[in-house]
Length: 323
Image 1: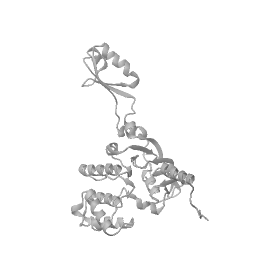
Image 2: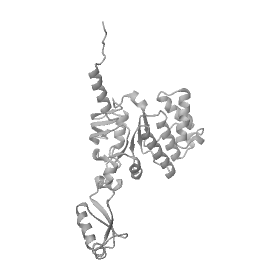
Image 3: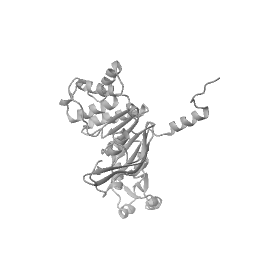
Image 4: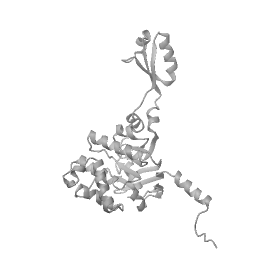
């Protein structure tokens, strides 16, 4: 007699496989987190927060100080429990320890043991189950990636703040993680080191890895992130593809020349540029033509992440309590 045990039928396996492949690599589902602050006050750090990060993307996580970003990251890593709601990381509930071996984590405030850089990176790799020649080889590789190969034998107690940041990034990379969770990874780095980090993140995406990046350096986020979310006072206030958000303005820029009287009447900017609401694009072009002018180009006004950030958070102020 054939022994079936608990094996799945073909249809059942297909259903489980579909559910697995459809799941986001990092998900927050109606998550709330409330802190008790001395003596009897409570602070709501996250307020029914829902977010889904897809595999293989670089995701920017933005917000002012005190918005709840670090709280969300600490919940995902299992350092604390939510007051309400639930979440998953790599298909497992937050706090599932074995899943963390596939995650590379860099905290906002890097605190490292006073050891040689190479030994320190190997120490963190060992915590993730790595050992032997594989571990020592990988430690050398990641220190090379972050530009610290020449000082691998030095004790990190003598490192500058920027060098410590790069060691922190190396330990996040040592286990070749599927998911990188980075809280302010370019903090204290000089422009050259920032370029190195940017290239590392883009390379990780090319390798199919997922990067969850929290940063206040909006220009860096704008350069590398596929999607961004803005958190304010514990609530998600903006979410979308970076390219679409930056081109979602309601104005167009028209460049014209030889428009004579039109230029004087409309006060064209130097170079023959004028910005008008998108709804007035056609009428403006027709007026330029009527004035004998030539339209050189028409383009949507490209916004910056800073514009969007200020639009959804300006005037909100900050609050006391955990971030």
